[in-house]
Image 1 (cartoon, rainbow, N blue to C red):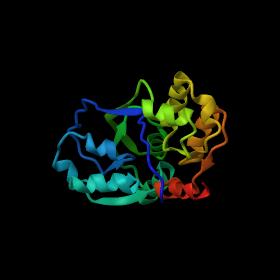
Image 2 (image 1 turned 180 degrees about the vertical axis):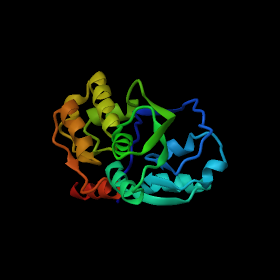
Image 3 (image 1 turned 90 degrees about the vertical axis):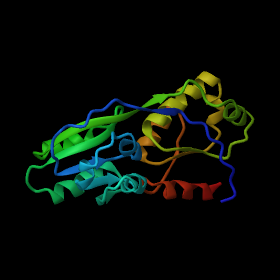
Image 4 (image 1 turned 60 degrees about the horizontal axis):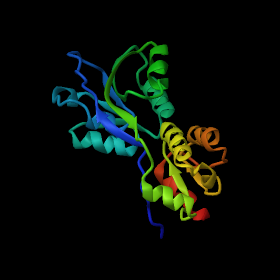
Length: 211
């Protein structure tokens, strides 16, 4: 698209010491590729159907030998698909991050299902934005900032204030993957972000055509 990408991660992913339950499940749920990638090795579990959020999650699972049965663009859509497929009480293993929304597990439990949550990874906030990112923001060298999650948007706002560039960011278009991400940016930076038509990276990148 003709843009140069300047990366400044605000999250560092760490492995959680998770022990796999010695039980059987009707299906495994994953809402992030990290949830699958940080799972302890267990070949028997790979025979269990997997339902995922996002093509990246499905690809990570299939690399490890899983077959993805249900695939949705976000957790709410996966919840609806799983509830439609499992009409009677079922038992699920949810591969999750330590910091997460609990809508999926709550929704399934409310529908009478049993959900065992296995936290396989955690995302820790970085201490600062990268120096080159701070300089580019301060000098007006950024065409737009892309935000992928509620938590990363919140941390970005905090780190921007810490670096003294929050005011400069208000003049730079902020692009949000979803309305939820946009709300975090509004609270943290006091800006009105552009929001992707649907929560997906391709849709987020399409917003760059505005600039």
